[in-house]
Length: 220
Image (cartoon, rainbow, N blue to C red):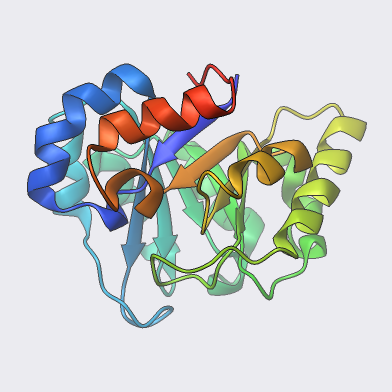
């Protein structure tokens, strides 16, 4: 079952609170982008916001750490309520140790391929991952345009996952909208992160419904 993961990076706190009950009825994932102003230029939010969202919803909290040395904070994000913790392999000394730390905390684990990072970087770890996140924009900013070459990364991951009969999900984040979602799904994506396409205009709940209807898909 394909999934849509609305990204709160594009939402306001008031909008999120207002529409969250409706969003819960349309999809069961929520994507949380944590930025520290070091690994990426922007700063977003930390543990307290994750915890406050956890207290308001039972949705699956997909937490993407765009931060330097994220292994220092895995435990705190797990305790705040994250269900899945994604990190960039280049931000830790030993990616496999980071994977083991997250699993030991009871969370699913994901590894992120930034735009300029090769798929080969995460292939050695793929069998240990619950999710591989392909960035289809430059990490750190919302509202960017989709980078077409990301489709090749998705296809390569899909081929490898299918060949090895793995259950690893492929998530894609960046510039996903009505014009690009079809291509991303065709390439093999399982989870679509959508920020501006959901929260950028109008009613977020209705936007999700329209996206589902347009592609004839029943997102869980």
